[in-house]
Image (cartoon, rainbow, N blue to C red; front, side, top):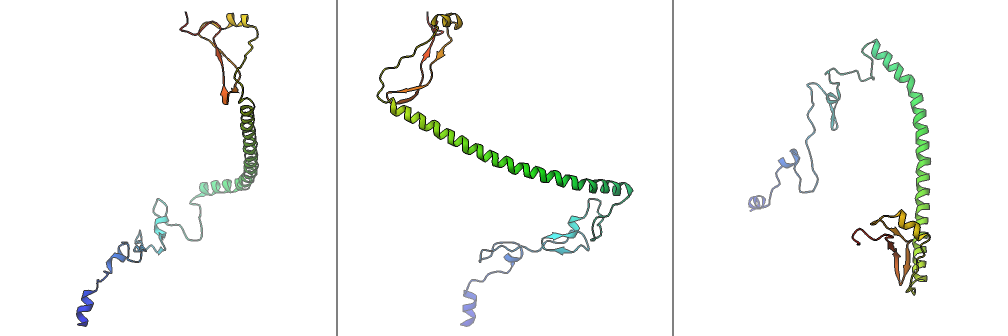
Amino acid sequence: AARRALHAAPRRPAWPHAVGMRSTMGATRRPPPAPTKPGARTTGAFSTGALAPAGGTRRPAGGWKPKDAEEAARFEELKSQLPELREALSRLSALKGRLASKVQEAKKAGTRQDRAEVLESRLALLENSKVREVEWAIPNYSGLLSKYPKGQCITSPQFSAGGVPNMQLVFYPNGNAEAS
């Protein structure tokens, strides 16, 4: 009877854990990566052989060493430029910080200005909600007749009247393009 109970219980196979399939606990296990070169050691997820230069030769673990005099001269030249480049980087970082703060200030000022404009338009809307008649005085009307040919218009400044915001009048001194 004990033997049948063992066979009746579902058994979890061992192989899903070895090939990276999801286990019943929700964790994913993957086998460690194989070394990329014969004799290369594997540490964690990276192989030391995978980091070797394209030529296939491994450099000593003590650091980089130039191959020839030309490479050594280039290295020393780059090494001499390093303090100057670090100083330039620190100056640029400081400038970036100041610029970011100025941008933030400008955004705040723009937001304040936008809010002020919205409040002004709302105030004008409230003040002019009872207005039923609008008069637009156009100075130098006779000069407009010669300046604006048929089909060209002039527009009034924006206004609010009767509870309608952002209204604007359009006037064609010599008529619109379809006028006879």
